[in-house]
Image (cartoon, rainbow, N blue to C red):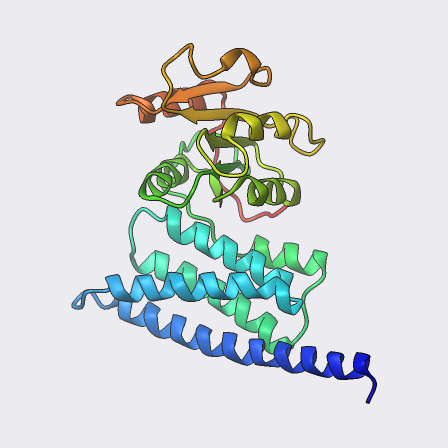
Length: 266
């Protein structure tokens, strides 16, 4: 057997092991959703296990030639993070993600771009009560912050305003996410590894697919000391003070970004 044939056989076996392991993980997800729905027990450990399993599937999908699995699992993480409460509706939404992942894995084939758009278009997004008199439209917000309770709170606030929230924990991941699915607004925290939020927003202002996005920098620096003069034109600076959430809501209202979420994926 030639080295290339042997390598192909090893990769094929590893890919099949990934499929079988991931399907087992999905079985555990379904069991966790049943447990979480039981209000008589403490579901915190089940939620933690659910988050761990989805993160594992997301991390391995692309490695084993299932980039759609990685993308759907990432969307599932965003849905969990921006959910205001864990209730029956949340559980039904998560079950739809689980079913979509299972269908792909059991088919053994990664869907093409058109098929993936259709799948994503039928998955739920986390949106709470929104302004009823606005035209129905998809409004995407990319939130770039290391994973933390603060990111969870900001994501929930954006979801409550009717945004489809995408999250990225690093600038590199943020660039990849924004190029794949251009958002309407990008909010980046100042302090990050690799590059800071200021530098990241300057990069976004130069990329064709994101140069027209509204940009916001979240910083602990007081007004006048956040390097405002060197930010891309039109960038707003949101200061992490006691009035941060009020300032965020005011900015979103001024920009006319509120809108109902649809199930269409473009």
